[in-house]
Structures are given as structure tokens and as C-alpha cells.
Image 1 (cartoon, rainbow, N blue to C red):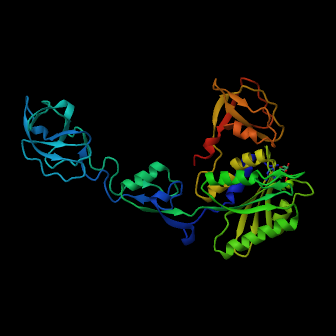
Image 2: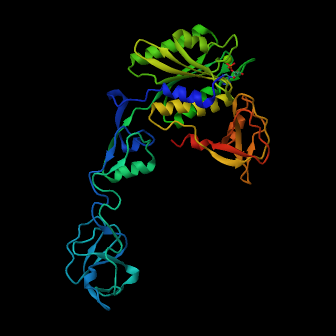
Image 3: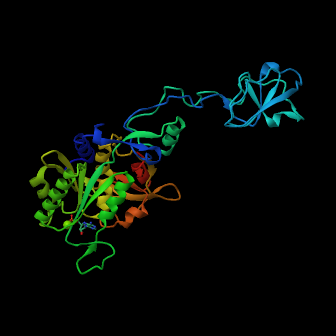
Length: 412
Ligand code: AMP
Ligand code: MG
């Protein structure tokens, strides 16, 4: 069994990140770009703001015109969006927020600080240079790189790109992950359940996890517990995708990866390619397979996750996520989490690092779900994070523990 961090490092080393070759990038409009990963640096060709403008509703003046109780005639009104005329010497311009500062003005006095009589205004006797002026380029200078290649675009990035007038950006294509659910016992939700069957949970769990990572899913459906059904389905899907010119970036299976007579994943991977790694020292989830399916054109990475849904959830977050993030140029480390006080005691596993489904209680301490076995998926919806328990590291109530909130797994 391999320690988890070694296993992740070994797996991620084999990830070949998307290149910027033709089919791996696309131009998308800004509205579709949220959550996508930039495949180019974005430079600004303009200053933002493009010209000095007013930060207030008030009066634009030249401070050299001021002395004790100077009264200035109002020579123009400047609304946002309309070009000003140069400020006539010895006058003030009525100006509104966002309107461009006229040539010759060098300060704006907010209206609350002025006395207005008829068509004249009396500003305070002294006003600082550039008072209430947003200077040209205060946000962005022409030529600046405003967002770097490789960044997953957040709403604020999209806003920033819009602010320099760019309508389309080059992004990496979405990753394509093919998933398959193994097990004769599986029935799809919405259908009646006959004796011996259970509902396919992992398929939906995986769709949700991949969606959160902005990854397209190729669903290979439910596979019966035979070696030929498993190999046939994989071969068929790989060939079909190749024929469509849409490469599969990774295949993820659930179940059938253990040592039971009806566990065919390992054998299927071995017969279609190579198995690089099999058992990982984590709990839940010891049997996780990593390998490659070979076809004439490529080696497709394969991750065989366990069958129990809580194990699928945890091993996906720890292992599949790291691999997929590496493919898409993102930081792949398991989030660091934070130190909290344990409101529980726990006898650690001798060899495997454990990940307990946990939540922060009202005192700000950590409670764990009372049922930690890997068949209890409800523990994952009750929880809002995982407590990491290194091997042989028993925990007493009051000890410090490392807690990783679920949302940290989805912040990159
Ligand atoms: P396996 O490794 O195939 O023996 O699966 C381990 C456990 O997970 C068994 O109890 C399976 O019934 C269960 N399991 C496997 N696949 C799924 C699935 N897609 N949805 C729900 N439970 C599953
Ligand atoms: Mg099975």
C-alpha cells in the first residue's frame, strides 16, 4: 500500500496537461468564459479609466482660481457619457459621477461642500489637487497583463476583461471524462427496485463532482460484472470518441476494483493497457487503481475508484481531483485545511490515513459523523469537511486536528 501523498505525486506526474494545440483551445465569448481556464495572457490595450473622471457629484474647478470665498460662474454641465468642453478660466463646471474631467480643471468639490446661488457656486477656500478625481489608468495601465494564462476565470476576472473592452478570450477546451459504473446490483433511479438490487448512486455523485470541476462527462452507463462487458464497453467508447475526434482525457470507474471474484476492473485495465498503481493507504477507499488504456493513438489515463459511495466521494476529492486539475494546469495539492479542536476521540488505523466526515459545531470545535463506514453516504451530506487522521495518530477529545472544508476542494 502506498501512502496517499506519494500516490498522488506519482499519479499527477503521469498527467499530461492540455497543450495549446488547435483542438485543445477555443475562443469563447465572455459570458461563456466563467469557470473556464485561460489559454492566453490578457493584455490591456487601453487605460482604465480611459480618462480622468469625477468620483462625485459636484463641481469641477481649477484650484488656482480659489481664494477666500471665491464665487465662480457655472459655465457648463457635464453628464457621464458626454464629452466636456475645456473649462473656461475662472469658472466651475457642474459635473456628475463618472463624467470626464474637462481640460483645465484639476479638482472636483462635492456638492455638499458648495454653496450655490443662481448660476454661481462658492467652493471651500482650499481644495487639494486632484480632489475627487479618478485618474486615468488608476485601475489598469495600457499594456498591463490583467489576467494570466492558466487561471480559472472567476466572475471578477470576467468583469476585469470586459473593462478593457475584450469580448472573446482563448480558453482550454473542457476536459472530457468518461465514467462507468460497475455492478450487477445497480438499478437506475426512477425504476422499481427488485430483490438484490440497489440504486446506482455513484453515477450521479460523479456527474455532480465533475460538473463542479467544469468537466464534460461521457457516460458509459452501468456495466455488468464480467470482464468482457467491462473491456467491450471501454474499447467501444474509446473507439467511438476517437472516430468523433474527441479524445477522452480520463476514464473513471466505480466498483469492481477490489479482490472479489466479480471485481474485473484491474484485469480489464491490464488487458487493455497497463496498471501503474493499485492499493493506496487511505480510509475510506483502499482499493483505487490507476493505469492507462492503450489505443493506436494514445494512452488514456484510467482511475478505478472503489464501489462504496462515501469512498467514491472521498477518493475523488483526494485523487481524481488532483489528477484532473493537473491536466488543466491548475494547482493540484490537497487543500491544507485548518487546525481545530476535536470534540471526539478516535482510534487511528495502523497503516492507512483516514478521512473522517466531520463538521464544525457551534463552539467552533469539530464533531464527526457517528457512522464513518464507507457505505454511509449520508455522512457526506451531514459533513462540511474532512478530518485528516494520519496512521497510528490516535485522537483524544481536546486534541488539535486538521480539518479540510469541502469548499476548499472546489476553490481552484
Ligand atoms: P464493489 O467494490 O464493486 O464490491 O462495491 C463495493 C460496494 O459498493 C458494494 O456494496 C456495492 O454494491 C456498492 N456499490 C458499487 N457501485 C455502486 C454504485 N454505483 N452505487 C451505489 N453503490 C455501489
Ligand atoms: Mg461490484
